[in-house]
Amino acid sequence: MWLTTVAVPGSRLVSATRLTAGIDHGNHAVRLVERDGAQRLAVLRRWVRPEWRWQDPDYTVEREVAALALLERAGITAPRVLATDPTGDEVGECALLMTFLPGGLPPYELDDVRSYVDQWASAQLEWQQVDPAGSGVPPYEGYHDLTVREAPTDARDPALWLAGIEYLAVTPEPKGTTFLHRDYHPANTLWSDGGLTAVVDWANASVGHPDQDTGHMRWNLTVSYGRDVADRFRDAVVRLSGRPYDRFWDVRAIVDLIVPGRPLDLDREHGMARATRLPDLEQLLADSLG
Figure 1 (cartoon, helix red, strand yellow):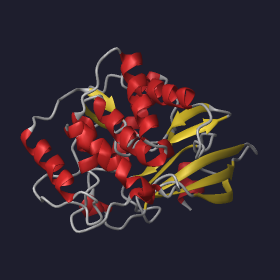
Figure 2 (cartoon, helix red, strand yellow; figure 1 turned 180 degrees about the vertical axis):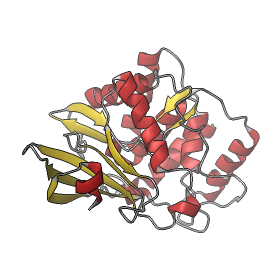
Figure 3 (cartoon, one colour; figure 1 turned 90 degrees about the vertical axis):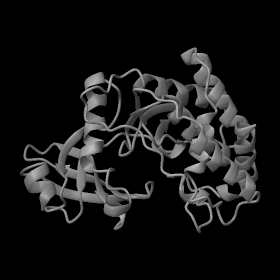
Figure 4 (cartoon, rainbow, N blue to C red; figure 1 turned 30 degrees about the vertical axis):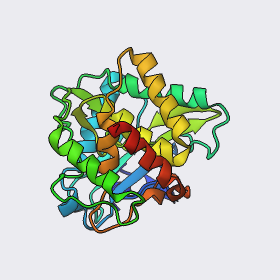
């Protein structure tokens, strides 16, 4: 077995527990006993979504490893790479073994909104100070290519979504050279006793404009916790960074949710019934376009 012969040679697998978070990856917490009797808790991450190779061929093991190496050099808390199988020859799917970090998802109800949004904002600004030059982390690219002008099939206001696509098609995208998580949302953060312990899932790491991370978090906060929390997060980023926020990135993040011919898939993250907040999401889009 790759874990005990290559990743951690001479170890013995004691347990493997599936971690429920994650969509495109199969994640398991694995407990290994090494030759000297020491126990090691790690996370085995496998690229299990069959269509990823042709739908998202850039989101590879190598990309996440490059991001994690950059974070390690900067001393930022994140998983550390233990071993990789980038081709899947050993594990059956492309795989990454990394250190296990303690903590759980944020609660469904935030008891101290300011504390949570300030910690989300502070964490984002910390990694955005890291210089990604020479890291191998690729440039940011939007998910929606803007060539198909269709609203989600469950849109309450289809014309609004088409206006969002048109806005992006004619508005120059702000550029940047900032290190981005690219998929920053509550379910990619770990918490313990009200404190943010780490940000995980760096498979989409990119280099681009810093407001991309803010916009992506804002749409997720809108449908997970409500528009007020999303606005307070933006305000925290502006307050802590000292620079204004460009609403272009609200539009970009929301339009990126469109898959032509399908309804929005808002319930994929954080286990919440988030589709009920579609009106709030559309209002955020309308305000950003206004």
